[in-house]
Image 1: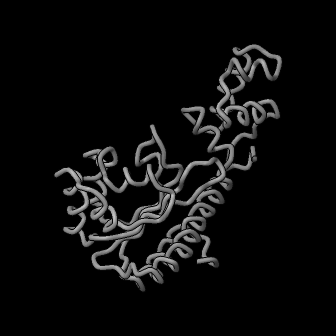
Image 2: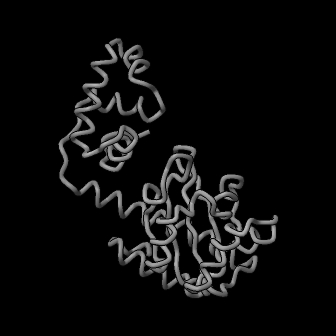
Length: 228
């Protein structure tokens, strides 16, 4: 996995490694949090296409008990633990049990904290996986490394894509945007008008092919235009 650089090759190596534990599919998600859809967060997904499309189409993420538990915990947990933890509604049980039809009866949810303070998630799953304590210890290491390998591959690819460089002022404004400052607040910090900030931000978003300010920050980080 460490030697591989191509995204598909890394996915293949991850799949091969997870098979040792009876895990046949995985999902890798970035910056999981309020207001973000499954598509916004997705790095990689090898679960059956029919299952994945149904999950997105029915917006299962809003009621999935695994996702609900993830909002409460920052430690690794299994699907079985969630089943046994509390009484679930009929819809919640259905979401978990539906995976059985696709060979996905149990799995792990492994939260991975990132530099922004949010959580990335790597979730391997299978029909009857080995999720013993020893296996889980190994899987936390493997899956954390796997997630970072995928992330680095995507960053490298995006940096190789042609883009117009940002000006020093555009980089400066994006750094303030990244920590949650509004145009008015950035204007006060830089001693310029909010309109000037907005204009610089629009130019930066166009150069980065970003329709939203938050995505412009993500793109700027990927291209190496800004750092923290």
